[in-house]
Amino acid sequence: MEMYQSYFEENKKSWNKRTAVHKDSAFYDLDSFKKGKSSLNKIELEELGDVKGKTLLHLQCHFGMDTMSWAREGATCVGVDLSDEAINLAKEVNAALNLNTEFVCCNVYDLKQHLDKKFDIVFTSYGTIGWLPDLDAWADIVAHFLKPGGIFYIADFHPALWMMDENFEKVKYSYFNTEVITEEISGTYSDRSAPIKSIEHGWNHPFSEIINALLKKNLQIQLFNEFSYSPYNCFNNLEQGADGMWRIKGLDEKMPVMYSIKAVKQL
Image 1 (cartoon, rainbow, N blue to C red):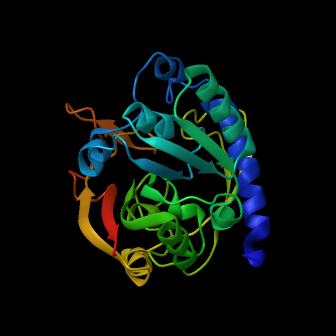
Image 2 (image 1 turned 90 degrees about the horizontal axis):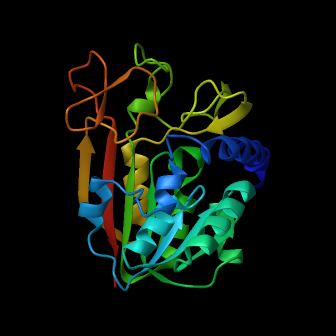
């Protein structure tokens, strides 16, 4: 991963800046979370199911609201993130709430050097794998930390979404993982007017790459769903429906917005 190190360092700086904005944003509503509100969505709660008494590893957890929400659902959790500012905040909130959660600050690819446990569940969600250049190495991490018979679950934004320009008016990027995508970003998805600027690096991943990476590591797919909506208002040109979900304006649900995959590590 040495060839990607400079990209990871710039992305870490970006997420440190974002954390300072996100913690006070209405988007994350940390105050309500501290008072007991779950940050989890109906999709992952229903598809992953009962986690009571299970151990759960949360990859790319940001400042850990979902990690701690799973702990409130009865799991024993470990959250991992690249951003030291995010992990410091996660530890602070977790200590205040006294939840059954630990946090580790490292690059996902380096996790074997920082953690020596196996888990019933590996979980990741909403804007995660696009920050990773190599999905074979990512799937190796997933498989390594899962117990035999353990569950991997991802809910994330659809690969087709990342092809489009920021207003979903035209195709701008390749569907395939052909190159690093480098952009200068102003603000953040929780507050587009926030006074921060960052250089960010990402990678698009087609479904063939995602699915084959998991299959090669003996992870058998049990569930694969696609959705025309997002639970979050985190992109331009979205409108909220009566169900509370956010869809792309003017497309009449013709374009997928997110997907989910559930897989089992074979014995």
